[in-house]
Image 1 (cartoon, one colour):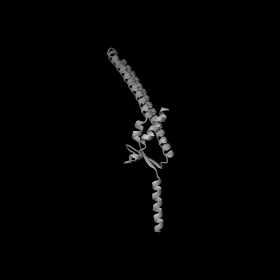
Image 2: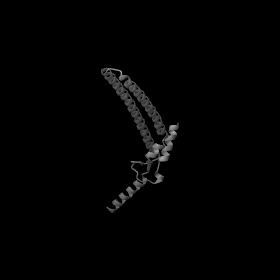
Image 3: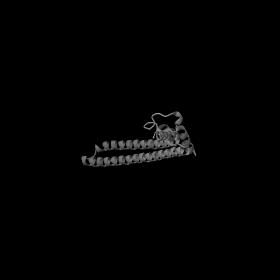
Image 4: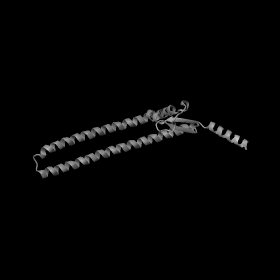
Length: 168
């Protein structure tokens, strides 16, 4: 019985020694990935353009509202209320259109970022398989690795692979 127990412990110890484990700092990896940087820059440019568009439309609408207020002083109360109601409806419609455009941009951005994260995970898996890793753990903010020997940190290696592939 003792021999079986010693043999089992020896087998477990050998199995543990054969596991090759590494980790990746997910935050550092994504922050250094050029494709992610480019995607973020592209969407920031679009978001800035949308903000300018919103500001421009808002400013034009405010000017129209001020012109109406001046004009309303010379109108009958009923005509002024009707025209003001039309202005309000148009303002709401414009606001809804701009909000829909912003939501569409956010959804597109999120879809691209999700796709990018999937690409990174596939690259990590491919690296792990081709280099004989049993496990590659995720570290960084909210990751599973609270401490890791720097010799087991694969972040820079995988980041270089991703950036090299992206440049091509």
